[in-house]
Image 1 (cartoon, rainbow, N blue to C red):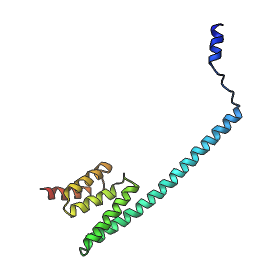
Image 2 (image 1 turned 90 degrees about the vertical axis):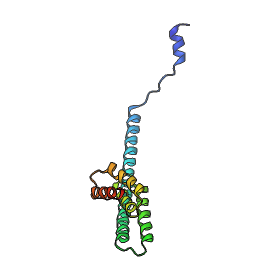
Image 3 (image 1 turned 45 degrees about the horizontal axis):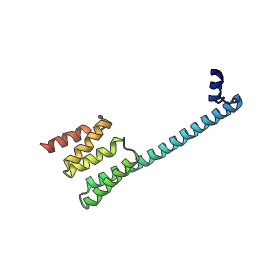
Length: 142
């Protein structure tokens, strides 16, 4: 038995794929990929809308807390819960962290305020109000 015969028995031949079958398979694969992309875009749009709605609600709750000191603990808890819920949807947006930092500052919890402040600064160092908040935190530390 020669070397060629021994090798021939070790390899299984590759089945020929018809070009039509290959093209059809590739078309279906591309269609499936496009369908997935469309679903991801739709999901992202829905989560963006939900996030924006929660942030708007949280900002409203924050200003409600800041403008009326009566029953402030309930309003404060409400604002914190809303901002925390928004972070469950999108963690890479600075707005909830900014307001959580500001709330912590207003309540005297400087460690938490600094923690959230640093997150905002990493996400968007030019976030509106960030410099003012930094000044306030620095003054409170001194």
